[in-house]
Length: 114
Image (cartoon, helix red, strand yellow):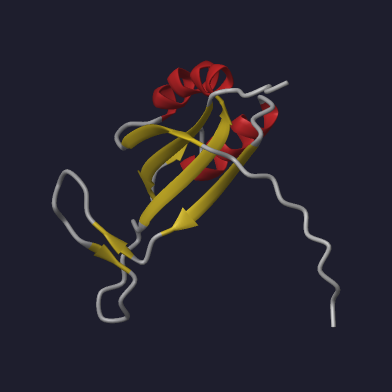
């Protein structure tokens, strides 16, 4: 019996300075995803990047940026991703969302700690 489901990786690209309802947008989105039963999400803070404006934001000591790139990766079944995606776009003034099918391998190791 093969019980396969279509799993989707949703990537949400925003800026560190983006806020929604007085809270950093990445935090608001993460809390929203958790409250809506999404299987998993991780927030990454980029060290450098640029977007539509072509302004390079960097964590360089010489040019401290207050708007570093933020990437939120979300993994779940396609139906659940569809349920939250449109709501998330409503939280964003600007940004980018990509979506791709992925294969998920669950692993729980038995490695002994030394």
